[in-house]
Length: 249
Image 1 (tube, rainbow, N blue to C red):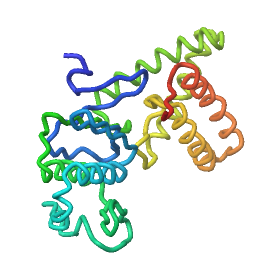
Image 2 (cartoon, one colour; image 1 turned 120 degrees about the horizontal axis):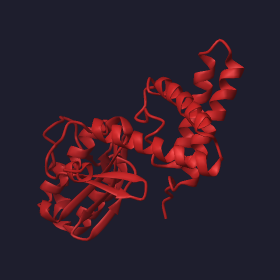
Image 3 (tube, rainbow, N blue to C red; image 1 turned 180 degrees about the vertical axis):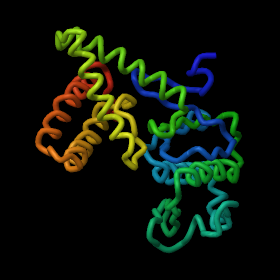
Image 4 (tube, helix red, strand yellow; image 1 turned 90 degrees about the vertical axis):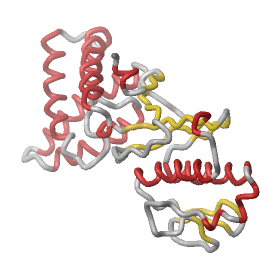
């Protein structure tokens, strides 16, 4: 069985997304965020769990207006906190006049809340499709291993064709990026592998944070920063030129 089938993946260009197995409540949801939720053709896009909770609840209350009178009775089985309240509080978002929803949850509990809301509103899970984004740290090991090697293969071809590098210089670039990657992996972030980005813009953001951190931990700070910029610059060019770019419409 191929990895895409095994892990129910969706490959959109260079983007890797995962179809969530509704209505299961998985536990490996740290470092995840939603991509979209489809409910019988109603397409709800969101880049954060909080955004999805707000959009989903608003949609469900419009769909089933009779629930507006009893939504305050909704209780999530995994928390004692009120999900819906009638006054403004910290980490609550107004979804209807005088009705606020709590969005201060972990990724795990946010996903579970989405499932609980669908169930509470008697939505048939067979017409629902939840697609999530797993940051590299949250991806299955064999998926990480496969795409890391694929990125290296593509990077070698790119450096040969676009930079006209010799095989010897290409391997030197790879060795230096491998070394930087070992350091990068120790950061407390969902992005823990330089080879596993599927978005050039996000890579640029993470690179700009990492290089000063890396250089400051080295005795030869200026030289280390210069070399990191050079070698990660090659990776930046690769991501930018080879389709690793996604922009919301």
